[in-house]
Amino acid sequence: MKAFRHYVATPVFFGKNVVRENKQLFAGYGKRAFIVTDEFLNGCRNYALEDVEAVLNELGIPYAINDNTEDNPPVESCVAIAAEARTFGPDFIIGIGGGSALDTAKVVDYLLTQPEEVDAYDALFSGAPFYEHLYQELQLPLIGIPTTAGTGSEVTGGAVLTRCDMDNKDTARHKLYCSAAFLDARYICESPKFLIHTGAMDALAHGVETYINVKSNPLNRSIAAIGMQMFASYKDNMLNDSLTYEDYEQMLLASNVMGQAFMQAGTCLPHGMGYPLSHHKGVNHGLSCSMTLGEWLRGFKDQSIVEPVVRLCGFADTDEMADYINEILSRDVDISVSNEEIDAWAKQFCDNPDRLSRNPEPIGVEEITGIYRRALARYIK
Image 1: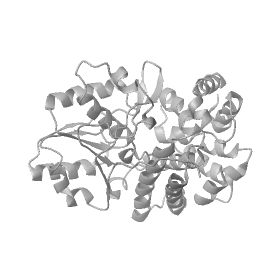
Image 2: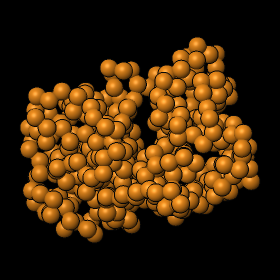
Image 3: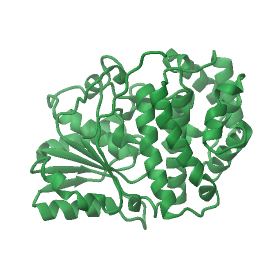
Image 4: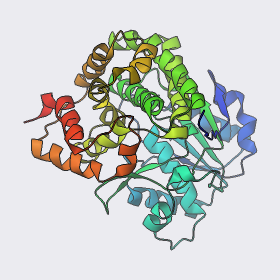
């Protein structure tokens, strides 16, 4: 058996009303809290924020709220929020929302302990890749409370940001872990369908990509397997718009589990291939990262490599799984792309040999272009 390391830094509290029932934990993190969240869609309540405000008020902890998180957060947005937080002077940070809000909270937390005049790009993206770091690098406590079930950011050390200097997305080169995570399915069960879909597809991609990844190991594969079996339990109800509260709990926990799994070995091709779709076409992160997932699986010359994940996810074969993924995506994605754009994205992707090296089969620009073309066929104009 090959050597590997496995690192999980964040304690997880799961269940209904878990924030209120563990309110004394908040008192141990400091006397002033800065909350990073996003502005919810019209008609949607931020139940997590309501619970946190109630707890902080009961504990007599002053707090400030910033709800200006942007999708696919640009570095500049994080810098602006960090400046507001610096003025408030918090002892700890609370991130509430989807992956964008949680990743923004991580970056704000990190920047607060850097010199005020620091160049954010240099501070965030210089040095060794984040997966080469071992220990937590945040100095202020950070509480993560997800209101979507996709990224698993509350238990991962990464923060994915939009870099205007390279016109693409990138991961900050630091281990930025939450000090604690609180998971309550009440926060997701009234979400719009597209948000449920994007979360479930993002989590699925995390589990599948890390399981197949050449850097994977028996321990993180076993964790990913648990998440994929959870996906199998609710996939049909999600397709038929008949999700139960138990399904939402399974979905939220699956997202967390998949996050723990992919943090050990990283993702593979579909996530990186999805970045241009979110950056240039505005496709939600979770949907963009799963848009090539089905065709990537279908394109393996040796199908025995992918058969385990297909079975774990509850499908008879790769075609059935790819068709399911494409059906979910067809309900939420409406874009136009050109063959010229696909060629440019494929070339740019292949300029990063790290992701290519994680694929179990040799792959190059011709195969990457083919995956894009098959996956995006309905959108090519």
